[in-house]
Image 1 (cartoon, helix red, strand yellow):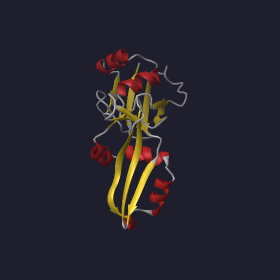
Image 2 (cartoon, helix red, strand yellow):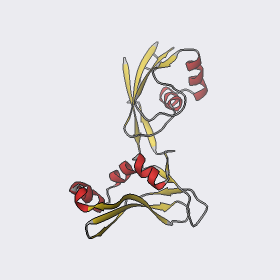
Image 3 (cartoon, helix red, strand yellow):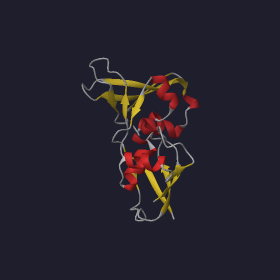
Image 4 (tube, rainbow, N blue to C red):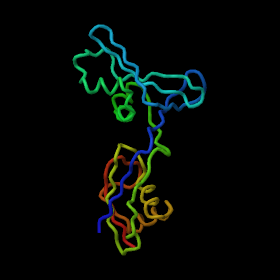
Length: 182
């Protein structure tokens, strides 16, 4: 029987960036945007606060774009300070690269196994779906979902009792499946 597990965000991830005021390297966002239009050009920044001193930093979302090239529904979401839009933009590789930031997903996600009760079966097939691009080690997900330690999961991989079409070492942020044989 195929089990369906979902990795879903529970909050917006922290932003890894050095604070210019204190020694902290993490910022959090509440989803507030600053929108500045100058004639036909628009600039948009996502505001983030240092977790230590509260200093505000601006993350560039749009720079010197023609106002007419921005979809009206996007402008509405920016003016409404849409937290979901902030989370979407933080996951955009272009925004992250432009602002030289990384995301810290620690304690910002959870694994929903749907109350899995087939874990005692001889063999289980599990499909893991990511609701957002959250980089997580598959070994950690499998350990958490099956109630095992990471060392036990590593041993199952080594013994060939845990198999997958994807590499289970490193981090993944895309859907995958695995089979666990007891």
